[in-house]
Length: 139
Image (cartoon, rainbow, N blue to C red; front, side, top):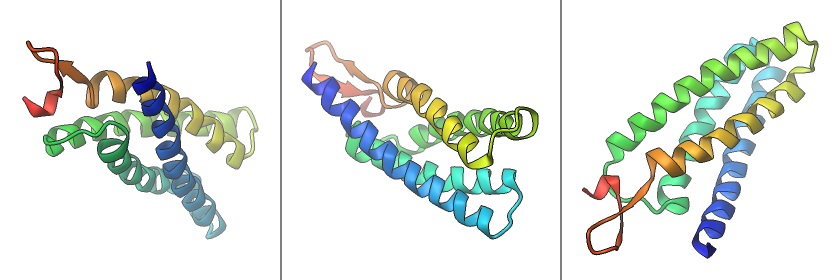
């Protein structure tokens, strides 16, 4: 239980760091009059790099299989960006929510489901026959 709590706290901290990068870049690009979906996509990709690095190295302490993990992470990110852009568009264009508020709401939704995917699929530890913890990428 303590390991889960520590891991979750680290996930929150690393996610917060990635969110600051993502949201800060979104605000900057918006201030530079970038189209909203361009600002969202570019800022999302910058946050993705920060998030992947911190999650792999610090949160889940995952070793090896960089290529497989990054491809899995990237596939999830592609799903996230499509859903995120659709939600941003709905919030702003359909429901009249301010773009900055819409971006925060979308980031929260994505962060919640990402934790499930990261912990259960991408960086999931498994037990070998002797009960020691390994990661899929160690196999």
